[in-house]
Length: 216
Image 1: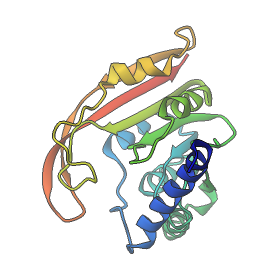
Image 2: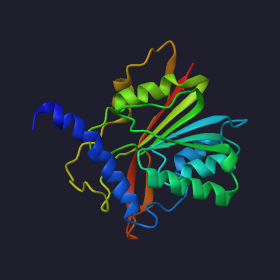
Image 3: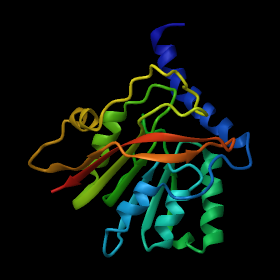
Image 4: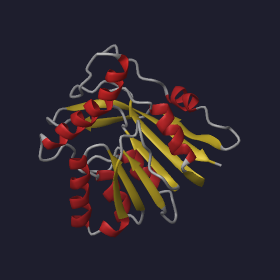
């Protein structure tokens, strides 16, 4: 297998991984909004247009829509987007939600947004995250916010349980974006801890890595 063949296969492999993950279970996530996102979005008055990157089955998207946001929800897995659509219909917010299938390593949604959310946009496959998040920042309206929340510690139920895993600090993630300081500023760089419950019911104290970028 030559390098070009490997490069062509990698996106397809990632797409299969995520689609199989969703197809293999009736529900992968609990459907609750991520707490940092809910806390952050509540500060916007009035709510506007949001972009949910890696939306999964739509817990964040539907929460935003029920709180007045118009949301573009993006995921690589068709099954995830189908479940999100069903979730939105049950919540009565179909008119405020649009779904788009993207492999963000290759394509990015068009438009501008007051809030771009990237909650745990992490994968076992290679992903040009800095490029994607830089695009997300440039998709913000003036005064808009890019909110990135990453895993900052090992979770006992995750695919990577190596205790020696190194997680980038918030400042490192922000610096890697290499954004124009005249147009963007770090609104929050933090590593809060919280009590989390895994899919098997196990509880653990975990660290989140929070990077919030404001477009000036």
